[in-house]
Image 1 (cartoon, rainbow, N blue to C red):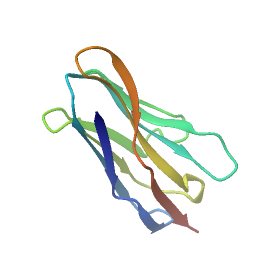
Image 2 (image 1 turned 90 degrees about the horizontal axis):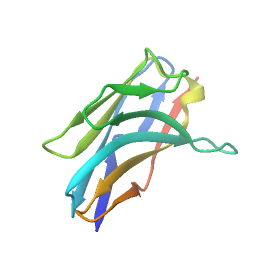
Image 3 (image 1 turned 90 degrees about the vertical axis):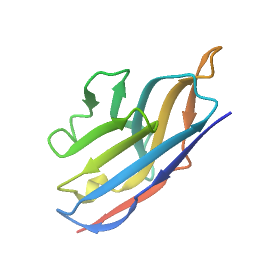
Length: 119
């Protein structure tokens, strides 16, 4: 069993910054990818940023140049540094990880953390 625990959401003014963290724990043999999705009210969940294996980050066009994803491989943790936040960034942010317990890879999701950007 694998658990993802997120932290770092909150309320911030336009132009402000937040840093999200997501730590994976449990039966982890290998991690293929870790990333962040978000879902705003009335909208579909969308990819924000992800890191596959040891590659560089992939970003949604809407956050390029403002958000930075990073991984601490030793701690099985992924971070999302969010700068120059805009009201349209308001959403519940979910951590996602593709992890193998030694038998097969599965998708895992965190519980979600609210990010609210006030205008």
